Image (cartoon, rainbow, N blue to C red; front, side, top):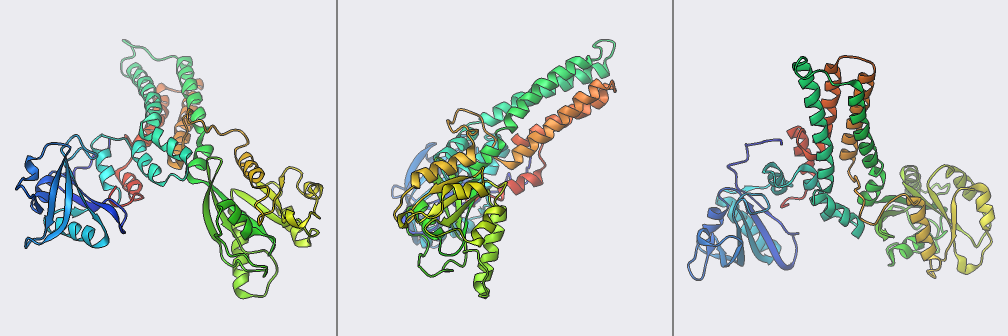
Length: 465
């Protein structure tokens, strides 16, 4: 475990709830002096101090200023180490949620010697004190940011340690193999060298386990981060209406005037358990309007970088040259062709689209009349998953790019260890590769990761968590 003792004497404080009007706001304090710090500003109607409060108890009273002015009516919870989120003494001040009371209480804690917490510092302390490993700590922010129930379920499994357990088992096997190899090197007469075949067999088993985990990484990324989806097409074909239909509200302005949408409109939509990050773009056409031209360029850029393209065609009029040109650009891309304006009659046939893009799904809809929505949703989910993503919640799934890279590095080291063993080179060189694989797996749980990398990971958290 990475150790960092520079913060041990600090007591930190932060607002742990979103700023704004609400029923309850929370100011969180953690550290060796957490209880005594809050106690200096806590006024109990019965004269009780927080120092005498039972663990996991609530105390009613007020937080007061240095002059004794009541800043807010509060209920204070006391959680003593190690039975707290950070495994330090933690005090949470439950006050009225509003900018003024929260800021006043925060400022009072700072006056009394607490330090403003850095982003993710409470969770970082939980990690450094061994309550969570690094992959579990990352799951905390994934839970907060989950866009669907499926994403939340995966993050909960990671928080509960499912990924950590699997990684630790593999790392334990690697460390055991490394110990056996090094024992043979150090004590050749007593122990003897390991046979190359034995090393290869053990590496092969671990290699299969790593490959099985890596096979889930792409689907895990989709569930966690969402499918970047661009709605593309000529002006006035119903792209904004399609976005509104998928979002189920009037999110984008819809008019009969071509070129109404000039900037990108983004919404996250839950379709079949997957978060689709859908972007409505400007209609692609040749234009001399400076502002519209910028919108067209942005649309083309989004089209290039999108995970999925919804190409919208006005099915009530014949295919235009610009339609054919854009359809040809979709070859080899993950896309669904949407024949819109079904309510106005159909002129463009499915066969005409299939001739241009034989491997691309085509769906008829009327975005204004909300016709074809179910089929469209089923089609986009099918296009993304291809039946290869398990949404049951039973399978272990890798969701983070950092974890994927560490698994790939470990796999590369294992392959090198096998090749070195089979080539008859000294076991010292095999040990180097095995050690590299173990260190790569340790990066997932935080056992071997550098402190500056850990700092960057927690910097992605919100303040107060």
